[in-house]
Amino acid sequence: MKPWIKKTLMAFFGATIALGGLTACSSGYHHRGPMSADKMAEVRGKVVQRVSSKLDLNDAQKQKLNVLADAIQAQRAAWVGSAKDPRAEMQTIVSGGKFDRARAQALVEEKTRAVQAGSPEVINALADFYDSLNAEQQQKVRDMMQQRRGWMPRA
Image (cartoon, rainbow, N blue to C red; front, side, top):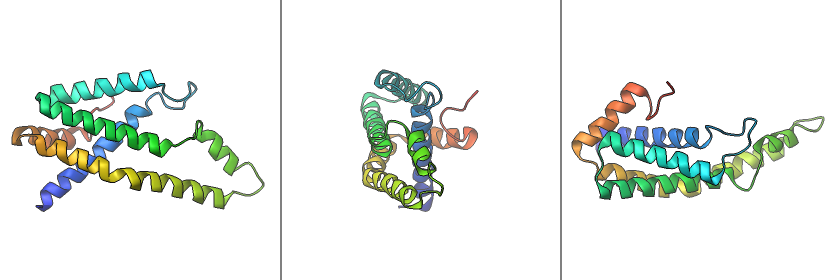
């Protein structure tokens, strides 16, 4: 694979993960608690619609984008895990007289395993989606990433 394609895919992958994380956490754990399944579906739908319209995707490309969105959503769910309140986890780590290094390390390892386990599926879905784009659409992706440093700037 050519170096510029690898760089583009990695940048696109990074932007997609960042976008997924930002949109998934946009209402986040701030005073309202985690995002509900309905809200998550609404945000996911808006992101897919916006990407579809910006790139003028055909039905096959939209299907691959939906597969990518599913993979990112599954990756996020695996990363979040069973913890309902990450703040409570951190409070447990710092609740004693000393920082609970073992629990903190275990938490990092748990999250790392979740990311590593789901990454191949996300990468494959991203590659399938990107490879389905024509040259003009791929250039739009590169241009958007270069200009805005992501898909959806906060404006």
